[in-house]
Every structure is written in structure tokens, then in C-alpha cells.
Length: 209
Image (tube, rainbow, N blue to C red; front, side, top):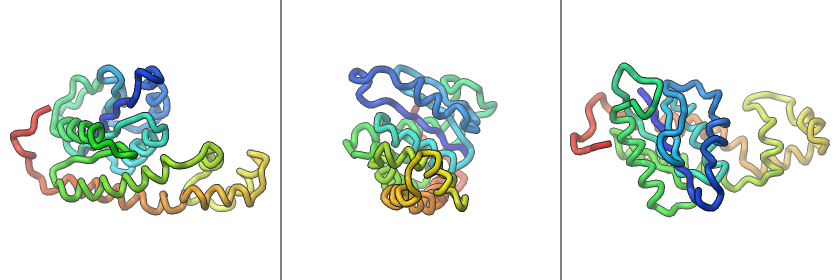
């Protein structure tokens, strides 16, 4: 099972080409097809892990400049290293998703598509809620959260020392940002992405990439 992400930039005429910046953020992703510019102000890549797909989508939403489409589906083998040479229903679903993300006008421009459309819609809803949490965080909150490690104990004191702020300030930033709730919900979003693959069958023949 693969998760193809098609991510294209919003308002590129106003802020310039930000594709290189997002590619730097994704350079350490363990991808089946590495993330790369596909055309214009768009990048694409594929991962075989739903949790990774969730993480990538939320990274893009954080920067408030991207439409995100997640396609749940396979690529034809052998899978090439260049996404522009790839084919398969994963790309079809990702394209449909990102096109819908562009057209909806939602504050959180993220969409999911896959063989099981109902579960894909549920995954999309959960990811948009997570995206809303991520989207609304302040720079001061991110200064704290970027130093946090999920599941680690006793780190708030160390972060406070690193940032020269009080432990209470760190704690308040964590609470205000709903960081704990985000990480508690991520597995549910990933599980829904997995389920969106549905039964092992081909999507409708009418789909075209």
C-alpha cells in the first residue's frame, strides 16, 4: 500500500517559489519515491507508511502556503526514482484530492481520496481538524514544540533552559497549542488512511491521471 502526496503552492505569485523550502523540510523522509518538484510550483512523492503521510501533510499545512492531496493507492512496478516517470492509481487519487483541496476554499486546504471513498472522507475530516490545530499555532508556540519529542518525559525543563524561559511558559505553550491532543489523534488519522485502501480491487475505470 502506498500513499502519494501531491502538494502545490498557494499564492506563488505573491511570495515566490517555495518548493525548495518545503523539499528541505522533507529531505529526511523515508520515501518510496523521494519528494521532488513535479511541475511548476508543485511537488510529489510517495511513502508506504500512513503515519509518514500524516506527518508530511501536517508539515505542509503548518506553513500555510500549500494545497495538500493524499492519494491512497499503488504505483506500477517497477517504481521509478523520479515521480514524473511513475504511473498508477495512487497518482490518480492524489491528483483528484489536490484538485479538490484547491477548489473548496477551505481554510485547511487538504483532501484525501482512495478506493473506499467514505473512509477517505473520514480520514480527510480528521486530518483537517489536526490541520486546524497546526495552522493556528503561534511562532512562540512552535519555538517550544520544535524541541519537543513525543513520549519523552522530563523534557520541559530542558526546553525552558534552552529557550531561557520558565518551565511554566513551556507548559502553557504545550497546553495552548494542543500538542498532546495532536499526537494522541495522529494514529487515528493514520489508521483511517490505511483503511481507505479498501478491499483489494481496482478503482473505477473512468479514473484518469
